[in-house]
Each structure stands twice: as structure tokens, then as C-alpha cells.
Image (cartoon, rainbow, N blue to C red; front, side, top):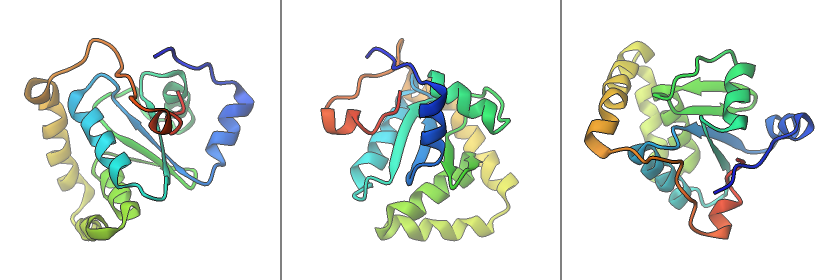
Length: 148
């Protein structure tokens, strides 16, 4: 899929939107499966997505002073950026249903949760593989939820 060019005014509108932005490693099979999992359960269409490798992904990392680290999912919600396990738990809370109950794990200190997250992230290519290019989004309905 050809990457869309994002202008500064479009970027500003995205950051003030009424949805949350999820950034992910676009070549990671596990990450792409995770995004599909979110899409399938996000019945309110609350989330929008972009890869960390995209222009918007890079601008977002810079805006929130985050390292260019492909090993973390990032959630931007209400103009705040969350990484690793905190991002995952906040995404689950927004999905509703059973998934919102996972938010109870927020009581576990982030450094402990993030150690587990980092261990999985470190091994994700070995366990689940990696694509040579950022994956294609199959349907127009789903494609519209990807910002770049």
C-alpha cells in the first residue's frame, strides 16, 4: 500500500481527534495480529492506527519525545502517550466487554508489567516472524481506520 503524505495541518487535526491513535511495528506479524484483534473488537471505531515506520508514526514519536523504538506499541489518548503494558491495558479498557477487566492489572507496577512486555517484544520476530514490508489492510472499511 502506498503511504499517504501527512501535512502539518492534517497532523494537528489528528492529534485533536475524538479517537485514540495506536502506533505499532508494521512489519511484525504478532503486532499486525494484535491490531486485527483490536479492530475486530472495537465496535465503536474508537481507534485509528498507523505504523511506527510511517511519517505520522515518526512525527508522533517526536511530538511526545519517545524513542524510535519498534518494540513498543504506543497509544495516544487525550493528547497523552502511553507505551508497552500501559498502552495495552488502556486499549483493553476501551474495548469494553471482558477486555475492560484486564485494566485491574494496572495495580501491578509498570516496571514489572513492562519486563514481561519487553521479553515478549524481544522474541516476537523469532516466535511469530516478520514481513518484508508493512502489511496491506484488506478491506476499505478497515483501511479507512489507518491514517498512513
